[in-house]
Length: 349
Image (cartoon, rainbow, N blue to C red; front, top):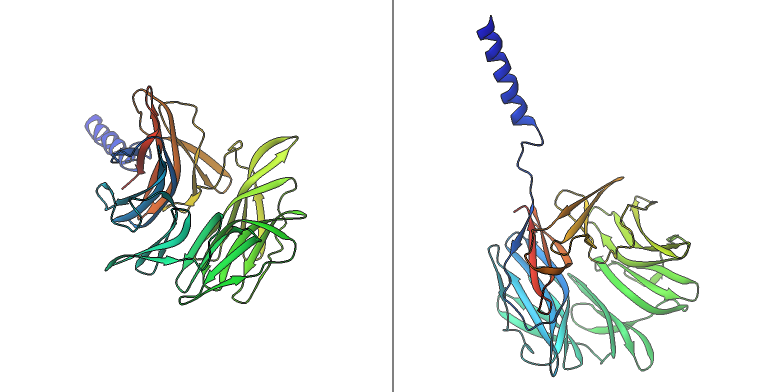
């Protein structure tokens, strides 16, 4: 009997070990080497098509001005790309978008805006129809692209339909468009400054109109996430008693739901939907030698840390991207005694 009892106990322990979450392999953040740039550097954007392709953009602060900076992830390592037009000239690189089989990147080249496009045949440049002295944001999908900014006459929304550029009009009370994103050529969203505060706008293929989103009072916006399913998520800050507090608004169907996850005054511009379906975003870390990330899944918010970086005094992930079943992070790290340089981290993979 004692022998049988011992066998049963061993089987129970073995089964518990197999199913216990603590014993399961839990993905953790790991450091990915990045070829150094000329510090200090600024990271603009990160986008991934899958586990084997991602692009990160930004610029170096050189003695003679800003210099564009482009990196490609091939599934194994980061490599710097210097083959694009204007790579050796003054300027900077902004948002990255995947349009069909191509990569589109907004570029300021010696003060003039254009869209870089990379296909199997290499790089080419799509110039803007006019110069803008403020280039605020860029979005591109198959069949359409937008660039928003200002020239000496005021607000400009430039639209590309695959063959020609045109200028689109906004509602009369829009003073400044702060950001833009798109799901399809006939479904784009933007957030703008108006006489009554921040307003969400929507393009329906014909014109821009007020999306009638009731934002929290005393608030601003940082980003809009558009899921293929039709779900829309807005992130921003609401000022309560003079203190900023992060809010998230999610629309499923025609219903908006507002939450205030415990994120303090985190800027939500880098927020993405991860491979697990939850929202992920970098947050201000309480450890100088480690980055910190938040995972928001419904009403539950959890936090994780990146790898320990010896002698670092500031680790700042600037952009996140879903890369297959993993998350990629790209940003800067400042090691004691040196200026900020590039860093990258991966969760899972």
